[in-house]
Length: 139
Image 1: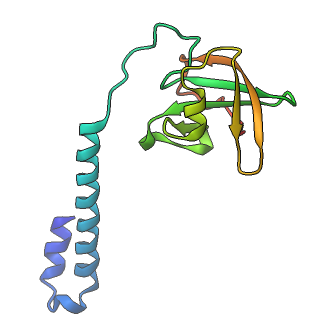
Image 2: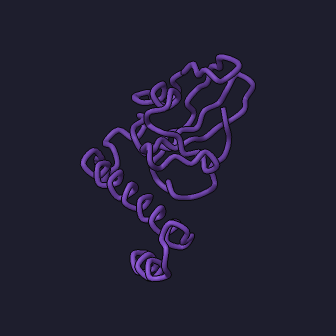
């Protein structure tokens, strides 16, 4: 990218040089992202082992819930930089994850959605196979 900006700068008046202006803007965006990621590295904790009590909800768990109507929903609790609602990955900082953390199999939790309060039972907690796309659902 810096080479592209350097080459664009050779093309004359920089104030009207679209390639140069775009390249400089892109370099600023890249620098901003590098600074953000560098700061995040100081704050993150690597979780490199499974918890001793795998019936309890911790970071990295897949949690399957069943609501009062018998509908099942499955979510994985991940870090803030890993959230992906389309793959049922929710942030450990989300209200739902905060309700689930520390709970066990068969515990009942109350989860607030945009329009209602739902009561759900934890029917499965597991940590294996966490990178599969076989989980789906929403509360």
